[in-house]
Each structure stands twice: as structure tokens, then as C-alpha cells.
Length: 457
Image (cartoon, rainbow, N blue to C red; front, side):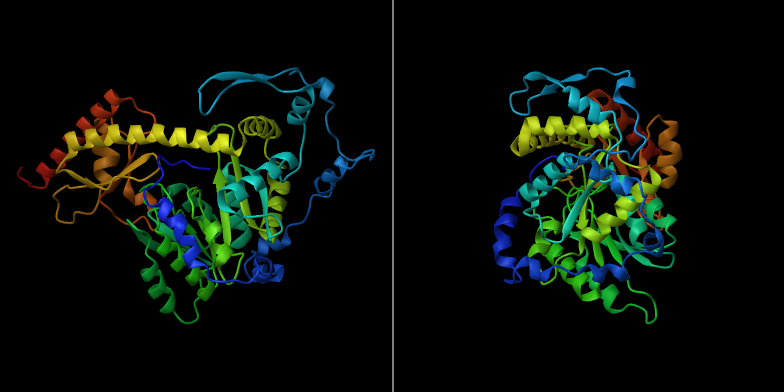
């Protein structure tokens, strides 16, 4: 779900454009890629993974009339927590109400559950994907729950990539994904982005001039809306071009949390083939990061591979947070969740505007930036005045830190760690006075660096 700040002005135009880009009038079910299509995409480790024989049978315990002697579940009478309640803020009125978990909900929340997630929450989230993206049941895709989207990205990437495989990584991108891809032994190749999103033309040229004998990429990882760190949003035209390239060059699209329509998950419904998009969602930025609520929507065989990984790693996502989330989501409904998301968006929009106002005050002429459309970060280029004009690393990691300012140099957001003059700064938590002081200190650092480079003001 969204971590965005505002609905972009172009959203309504993009949504209206969808009718004009319909590429196939064939029924969707007839265009869904068959299960055997993914044999070439699943990793060898994923193919070797086997079911936990106990966990595979747990769903049968819900069968009416069945007496289960299956699992070694602890008796709920031994749990020390006997009741639980929390206050919930209404997404529209801000009025608070008290939610009390029923005895049955609490018993379920404190017990083992399915590796995919509790069925009622899975059903609610499937409905959410129809509400947000128009994707219906029976269209060849499935969904499972995870301990945050990072957990699911890790499991999906390991389900798809072997050592020596090639993964395309949109850059700059969230630095936390690099260790995941690196751990598979794959080769990461950077795909450039600009203010309009993925450089589709550059990607086309790369793929059409691919070295003979070198394996073609299996996946492209992209965040097409409110990308961390840049806040950029990919245009509809760029997204359609990337979908076309995925079909022509036979790779899957791993879509990070990009809430605003049209997502790749939405757009692929009108493509000649359906089933190339693996979508990751998270409620961390709008409900609670500590609850670790993530879910993945993907072709069913990839979902199955992720569930098998969960069975053999952490058994299941936490049941209690699932029960709490489900109760909250049912209280709000889909419209209520949307209203809450809009409220969160407005909150970060205001924080962004304060930060940018102070950027103009302290860094005008010393840094360059584009106003982020979404997210909680500013991505800005330092005008250091050095001959290379291309490396913020030393300034941010040493000089800024010595002045008491902690930020990230842009190099960490590129797969190869290439030099860049860019910096990422978060504005989500700081009050205005601390933002002002941080940017005042950063101004001093930049001026000192420019002086050392021989720049005269």
C-alpha cells in the first residue's frame, strides 16, 4: 500500500488513458501464461525445495467435522495473555474507538497458522487488489502474506535467480534490495532512470545489443511510483514500453510498492500475455512498520515457491499482527483504508513542503533538486565545485557527520556503487527546527568543500 504523499496531477488522465491502450480483446483467462512457462524462470534451489509435511496439511484442520491429531500446537489455556484491545483512529473524522479482540480472535492470533497467511486476511487482500488494480480471482495469480515486503522480495528473488543469472535493477533504487540480489550470485545490471521513470529507450538499446552467448536478463526490478530515493514516477508511456520489452525479451517485472494506478499489475491485464508481473505491497508506511505487514501478488507457481521458502525458514508470518491488521481493515473497509492513505499522503506532503522551503533558504545555488512527487525523501545534487562534480561520498560520510548531520551519499543507491554527487535526505520524522538546523549545518559543509576546491563565491 502507498507510502506516497499526494495523487499526481496526471493520475486522472492516466486512468482515462487506459481505455486507449488496450492491446488485446481476447478474454484474460486465455492470455494467462501456463504454469510450465515459469520452468525456465524458477531457480534450481527453488525447484529442490520440498514441502514441510506437517505445514502442508495445516489448512485441512479447518475442514468442518475433522478431528485433528496433526500438529504439536500449544494449548491456548497456557497462554498468559487473556485479553487485548486497542484504540483506532477513524480515517475521516479522527474520532477514536476501542477495538476489543474476541476470545476467538485472540486464540487464533496467539497460535500457529498457515505459512501463506490466515485465510480471512488473504481473502481481504485479494479483494484489495481488485479494488486498487482491477485484478480478479481466477486470473492465474495468487497472493501470500509475509513479514514485510522485504521478506517477500528476498524469497521471490531467491525463487527466481541462480548464480550467473542476470537481473536488471532500476537505479537509483532503494539500497536495501542490493544485498538480496547479490546473495543469489546473479549479475546486477543498472537500468537508468530520469524524471519520467525507467529509461525505456536505453533499456531497449541495451537488450537489442545484448552480447551473443550471454544469458538474457530474467527480471527487472522497478518501483514506478514514488521511487526511493528519487521520488520519481514513471509515465504511462514508459510503463507500457517496459511491458512490451518484457514480452519481446522474455523477462519478468518485479514491481515494488507502487500504489497509484496504473500499476504494472493493472496494465498487464490488457497485454497479449498476462503473468509477467510480480508485485510487492506493504502496509508498513501507512499502518505500522513494526507490525511487518507485506504481501505479494504473482503467478501462482511463484507464490507456491515463496510459501515453500517460508515453510523452511520462518514457518509463517506472525499470526497476531495478521489478526490485528484484519480486524482494523474490516473496521475501515476498502474505502476507509483509502481515506487513511490519503490522510497519510497529505501529512507527508506538508512535511515535504516545509523541507523544500528550508532547502531553498539554505541550499539555493549549492544544491539542485526536483520536487519529489511521492515518498519521504529528497534526492539532491551537491554543487561542490570540484573538477569531477561527481562524488558526495566524502562530504556526506565524513564532513557532514562531523558537523552532526547524518544522511546517505547517492553511491549506495546504485548497483555498482558508482560515484555520484547526489544525496538522499529523509524528511519524515524531523520537526521544522531540526530540519532548519540540519540544512544550516549542511550549508556550512558544502561551502567548506567548495572553498577547498578553490571555488570563490
